Length: 421
Image (cartoon, rainbow, N blue to C red; front, side):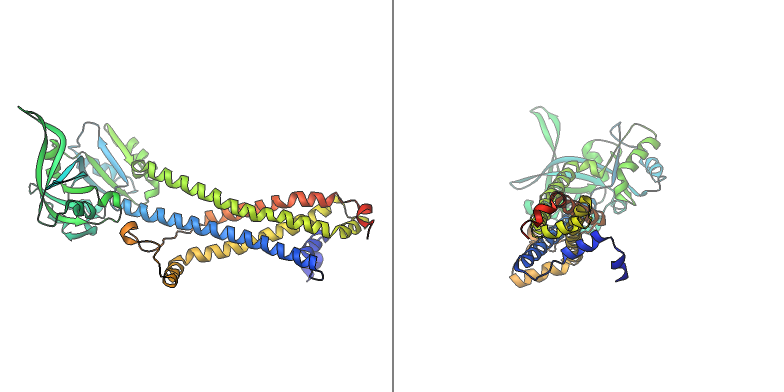
């Protein structure tokens, strides 16, 4: 109570008006409109926090699944092959961010099984080195990734690719390469038969439906090169991949081409960022509508309190003081609504793995089908910078909404306001 007594009179009156009395139907209606404004701001803030958290969760889930197959950084030799890849790998590992290296060679071709043709990316790897840079060996659901042996011409297929080709373990598929082979009848595609020894599931349709692994030695023979095409690296922090790629380019000798994982999927990440920005703008409009509902609330309050304003002016209150009273009232409504929205949004975002299954069980529906999305739960990744940004935008919009009604209240003339009182 002592704190309240020490507050400037603008704060005391503003707080009093925020707790508008209910002695008349008009005041009760104004209080109701204030509560609606506060609830609208809170719901808008909570919705924006939850939606962005879910979008961040999906992005993180997809990124993790992509990087379970992709390397964080890839290094290519400008000569087309890297015969001294062990030395290059040792040089790359001098960077403290690099925790794993593995050689590879990659090409594109068509996999053929009976009358079914499917395009595929064929990646040659060393089974004993590949676990250092990817999780494909762990993701091999059937067969064994280590069954890739040099000269055996074995192959490990993505689960969707194997399903499309209608092939099982131990059966044969034919690889047709785009690089032609000259014959008296013309240039014909080169063909090679492979035995399926494993089927992996990365949980990402792009890789499950179009990626296959063979032994590096077999890939080199197919590409007619005598060494790996390059190196794949895994880092401690994948988010530092662009900077590490620049450092490696500057520190490693030779004519090397270095690219990081974000460059490989630049279009996808750009699309996700654009979608997040658009969702932020759209849902911010909800907060804006609720915030500017304060305008009507304050206008009604100013109209109802004109006699009070006139009396305060007569007692010596200046126009800036009158303006400050109504700005305090509107700002308090905005801050309280934002605080409620932040609390609700954070609570839902942190417990969405419990809330969504409850709603699915209650309504008897399934929001995410595993057959389509490869995940059966709604992911959520709450990021506090997003929460602070959303809260700040809501408070600013609420403050802006108070400016015109407060300015109008400051222009009330005491004589005219008291004429009919």
